Image 1 (cartoon, one colour):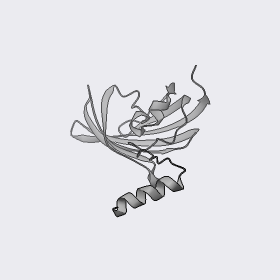
Image 2 (cartoon, rainbow, N blue to C red; image 1 turned 30 degrees about the horizontal axis):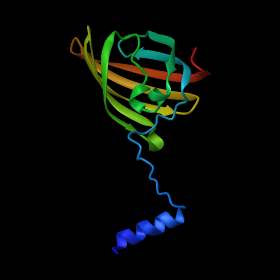
Image 3 (cartoon, rainbow, N blue to C red; image 1 turned 135 degrees about the vertical axis):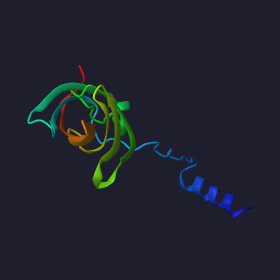
Length: 151
């Protein structure tokens, strides 16, 4: 009998005749609780003195909160389509990602970071675009709070 076969017999004996394995998680969990969330984002532009605040409600399903990429705060009020990449989750940094956005004002690039908790989170996104030979910086600060179950 091989060493591997002996080990398997010992494991079967110790577990009462059953041997099971937990599947490895495919992706890291976002850390957020599923349900209804209020999301408030303040957008600041470096080329103007005005700020824009956008507040909305979102329903995160269990499959949404199971994947960090599905809970990243959207870029609201900018009129752009963004693609997140290099999403990293875990540790003290929370969730971090890179962004590439396209819109009528041109292309913007940047990064974001999110500190998730079960019932609240904060996130910051920093974007840059060139406008008339100048670099315009756009900073977004988002806060999310859990409201309860989805309607």
